[in-house]
Amino acid sequence: MNGKLKIKEIAAQTGLSISTVSRVLSGKFNTSEKAKQRVMACAREYGVLDDIASGRLLINGIMVFAPSRAFDSRSDIFYYKVIQGLVNALTPHEVRLRYCGLEENNSDAALFLEKMNDPLTEAALLIGIDDPYIHALAADLGKPCILINSYDRKMRLPSVSPDHRLVGEVAMHYLIEQGHHKILNLVCLRRYTMEWRLQGIREALNAHNLPFDESRHLLLANGFSAAESERALTEFLAHCPNDLRPTAILAGGDFMALGAMNALQHAGIRVPQDISIMSIDGFNLLALHDIALTSLHVPRYELGEEAIRLLQQRLASPLRPASNILLHGTMALNASVKRLRASRTPARGDEEKLYD
Image 1 (tube, rainbow, N blue to C red):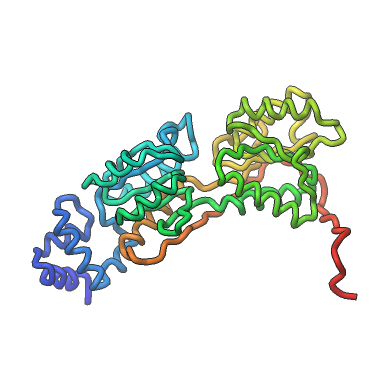
Image 2 (image 1 turned 180 degrees about the horizontal axis):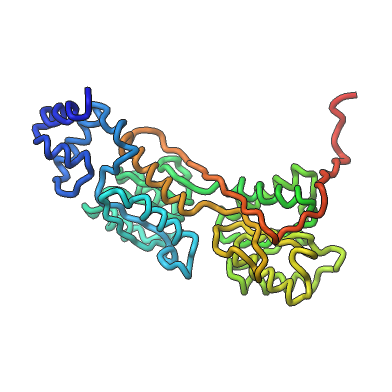
């Protein structure tokens, strides 16, 4: 049965006109909610949505919930770019995108319910919202809802996020493979996703039989700014003997890497000749003081684009099990990391023999 015949069948089954059915399946605004629900139910029965879900978004209104800083590029460039990815992915679709600021935790539940119960809200996207009560409300309301860079601990809502653990692991593996064994991790653990990155870093060190001493290999900053990182590293260097200095710094963001570079320059330490710098972030700074920055780029536009694809699948098959999609990062290899030598993995002295 071809597409036109299916539209005729749906029209006959629902008692609606062919033009009304066509408008609904084209994602047009000018149809009633009651007619839309009848057409969508019948379209699922005939398998029409399986054919068009990847090409059309069969809703007209999406509400985006995110921390207020996400709507200002100067406050949170990462989430701001995620929202740009959403906007770009929705360009081919006739969809109204509206926004609401929510706290990451202890969110305003009344505000959330008010926005979700608005007839114009047909689906929701939650960016970086960790409040489990909000997740439970979203699941109970029954409207399609996708989490971005967040996880539903009850496994009721689908989500898309960077693979934070693997991002940390791959970045650390790269530095070790360049011959660096004394690596300082400059991080901000404001959110559990950063803790997962640190877990990946630890796993990479363990895989290479290298120790992780928090007093020498971990430097915590209160935020992701260059000024905060510069202060933290300046104090660290003041108390670190020269023979214990790291040969490389892995920074949790491009601006943190810039702060590290400033601190090193003020201390008369050259990059990368004396200490290398690598960043885990997303395209914010291409160079530090004219030195091209080696970085592992975390996906952000792609998060928005993948969230829209996941929403399309959810609309076509609302009863399918929820899933977590993890996106990989990409390496940008530049001049801020110096290769010391071919990496040698130290042998463990305490391993038992497997064979005689």
